[in-house]
Length: 193
Image (cartoon, rainbow, N blue to C red):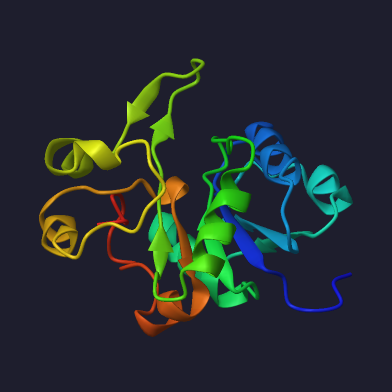
């Protein structure tokens, strides 16, 4: 049990990914985080149940089931509603986090109170090969691609017109997510738009 609210909540939407969810949970559990962590596995009416015994045996992991099928965006929103951490990250059940991903994000957000969200590149399952760095950053801010920084104010316009970050690469202050009511649940895919 947690004595106080966790520093970060990781929401893992689950829909029939089977054993893959173990890898996702393990990648979060391997984090060396200066703070506390909760993991919420949100089962979106799967016919193939998540490995419940495994999920429930993990410290700080909760398994919740949506009352009806909510699809990706709605399932993430359900997770946000049950999250208690100061920060929220998302991880698809068939993906994994790189080591120290959460620690880097939490540290940056704690040091920059005016920043609401941080993001990163997405990697494919090949060592050191970048699958996706936000195109708008590579194109307009190439010197920032591999740095940890606050993006310039001018990027706000670009965020509205370009795909920016994959949902699994961001960490957001929970209060900000609550202010905007989470994701647009009418989107069946590309909910991060």
